[in-house]
Image (tube, rainbow, N blue to C red):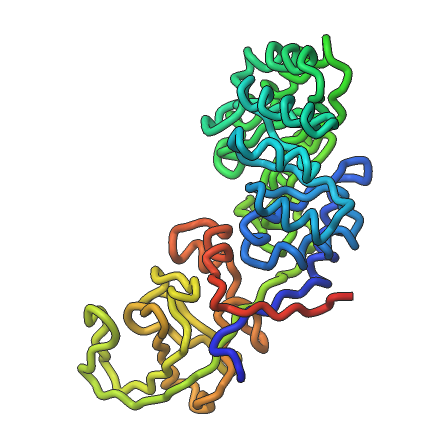
Length: 373
């Protein structure tokens, strides 16, 4: 049975992108692809394997469950837990050999006790809150936290990190945050020699602030061939789009002038219109906000979206595309002929982030993997 809508993920493009990122930041800098949220909707297991094939030793996840899944898929990888955890997850974190970011003494104690029970040292990275405000120790408390860790036993801090909230929009604040991280790192290293990795740079930061690359970078969007919003003069590695989202026309109807289209009658046709029904909607993760403002590709040409996007259907104007018929392939994200619709365009059109566009894709959308080896 043919799928109604599907995503094609080019693993060769992912490997290419990681190679280009490594060349861009320099070979001495480690690369941690961020594969949380099912690798931004691309499929965490397959992306993790591709990253390992590309020579990446680290992977970044947000939950213990994500880490557990990847530990089975890529047993030898170093896996960082980038979001806060609960104390009752500490034993699993240690058992799975995850490296969590630690913000406070309570989290550190839970991991130290888990390390004692598991007869192994929990390895952690200290997190510094340099201005994000959601997790991490305040800069003035980091050295004290590191000192307490050193006295606990069964826990060792092997890295220190922060996260930039405004890398794309506020260079002055971002550079202040970097300086704060480096100051905190120096204070910790004055009494603790176990720190190996200092990291803070997302895709946008590694492009905009070369000085932020430090020992390791944590690219997300660039891994998937999506370029964050940066000025045209900023050098960007030649990444390739990994994701293509497709569907097929299931119905073509001729509607008269004055016909109302979709929920709310937000579109009234001002000409006789060939309307194609596409079996995709926000139930698949296709953004509802594209109604009346987005477009799709049919026959290598743009077809405007008509009316509101439904849970399971989207309507497009194919009046000027006579070859569009039932069964015609439609590209929602990707390239068809000379035409293209990027995730970046959809994010701008719907006033959201590129991450939001791809992570919306639901399990109802099967992934087809290309270029596996």
